[in-house]
Image (tube, rainbow, N blue to C red):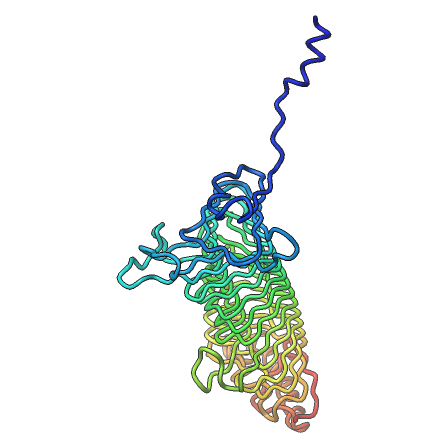
Length: 443
């Protein structure tokens, strides 16, 4: 008896059902019908052509939505006001599951708000998305997202979605990461086009952006809080009208837990000098704009666009290359900022470095200037070299040391003027042991 029970036991074990492939429209007429029939682990395969959504698609199960076969790479999900009446603006896809994946599918959201309808989404949000991530991990792989009047991907607090090899076109935000701790988005090998903001990060949010191209956005990446964090690596920003990367937040907050690293990126602008998309004539394009403490901008190239450090900002800017900056200075340091500029190379810039504001300081170490404009390579008044400190009618050791610095400074200026490379108001921090200029013939 004991032996028989042992023999029959395996037959009584209930095995989990294998994942099913639910084909649309071969087996199910619509994506909604397939979603209703699916269970966790199933795959919904879309046939070639456009699959019209008459209402938003809620993904509440851990499923994989894919283009059904090799010749159905043109599978498209579309929510269009022509196909359905919307009582209010609404998200196209709402992901509310533990884990889901959408691969090789084009997602098009053209459903504008009808006249007289509510201006917010049915969930009360101010923004409307092609994909709204509400729960868990969402992966968009090799997808094309298009929204002519809304945003593309919205990320709720505490989530960690991933975009891989996606092509995103949006009117407002391509990726919007809400305020909230433990909210992380990973964007890799994507292309973002024509958005007002390519990727926006709120309080406590973080992002990893790698090998992604931002084209013709007003702002490529906006780190909008002193408690947000981002790593932007080996990415390209082309034709961004306001800034490729904008770092804002509490510039002088000593306790800020904020960190941003921009490494190995390319910033370029193809618009005529002095006319950037989204800005008035006479204002040149900006590659990186910083109004917050602590960023590291390193090993980047700037072509026909510059770096602006303002509003008491700090940070490290090292081993970057600036070329052909004519519409505005390659680097502007102003408004009491204190950056460290180290080992940057400037080539063919009308004004390479401009420093303005009585409280603006900083350290400038090992920067090189080549073929920059005559008498304007460095523009602006340097910080004072003399303290005028006296004690009991005698100069302090501090004052004597600064006088020696001043003599060394004057010798450097005389040499620069003699070589017709810089103007007489050029400051050279070599006397303070903090800078070394490589002089070359002016253009």
